[in-house]
Length: 596
Image 1: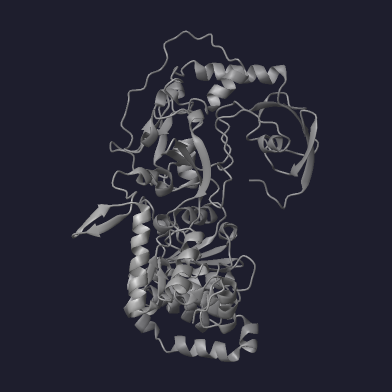
Image 2 (image 1 turned 90 degrees about the vertical axis):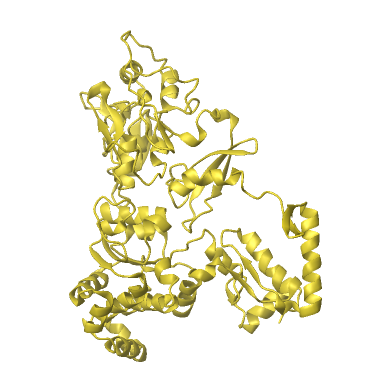
């Protein structure tokens, strides 16, 4: 990724002038003027490797062809991408690759969307090699991922993605030269997070999904962009359907806040939509048994029962629960149905399990019901505090951002989790932590309080805050001084010095992001613990600084939507309080209703 703060340089590509930040790779500069340089090993998410040699270009004043994927641009550079010398080089690379590539195109799932196919057609590739092609013995890889190593072009994208992006290192090249193949470690099937990243990033058909093998050709599918329906990360994905059947899911590089990355649930979890046990028709209980019926009959039955019960017992006898996986429109209509048609405010959703605690805390301290940080702020943070998250399992793509911030951008990571940092353990963010507080889930709020105590007692409070809000600072100071270090040690098992070192790291950070997970938010102290984390940011002067903030992680994909659409008892649409008379009257006027 080029440095956006770097000075701009001017260069020419095939006679076209382009201005880009110094350090931009030639292959990316070419894209800006619509020139697509062929490549296999390069990918914007990965470090340049330059192993496939497909992206060779001519650079003026350089005696030999250069790899566009590893050559940074400079002022006045002149690049040519389509001369006879360059085209001959591309044909030669293709000739070597095709010397061992099988003629599997009619049955390969990548057929029709394969880079090797496209480049072979573009350069009318031929081969002088008549030797027997290599053949790798077939190996069982996993129940979800299929490999055909005879098709592999040895670009190593899959290996590098698993290492650089996922930090799992489940794949590695074995062998030498043309006999190099991608393998997993050990005799057992593939042991990884099954994010599907290796399937998505493979430029040919060497790694494919077993869930959709041999079921389609790309031109048979219809595409639709949507948002993943699992956790609160809100990943953008593209679903591919054949008729009424969902065939596969993927996400293009640069798509959405996830930048094309998905987790196992997002990439492989789509088959639940067509499972044989999924309910597709309404059921009505008759004679003690649920029987299938029509939507018209079911809706009429429900409406009659609501009317009868409301007449007999009143609207307040009803309560309504809705999932945080529903759309905003569904959540809005659900709460409006109960409030206006039924006449009850007994409304709730899965956001109640924990997300509402974080929202209430943010409203009290910051006056907002939304995050004050973005995914980009997580990447740019120099201090990350994760509290009760187990983030690589509950919010995997947010976990990828944390990994990138720590590994590539050298952020300091502080974790308060029940997990032990064991090297080699999959989905364990604690292995990257600089300050890890291992504690029981029930002791997480107390551990957070210990961090706040260390802030106060080491005089890490922002000086201006004491002058502006002496009563607030005094109240917090009194609260933390009421707890002794001995009590904290006996409760959490954590040495006071560890608290003090982590507190210094928070205070020293310029961009501090706090991520709160379900182990904190769902606890009986979820609201109080969220306030303590906000206290920590406020006391150190981070709360109102750019790139700093508090972010409660939602477990279900639209818990935040449930809050904002009013699908919880204390909120009307827009996250307006039901006790705020002006907001209440304004919404009732909009609805043309009179609901107390």
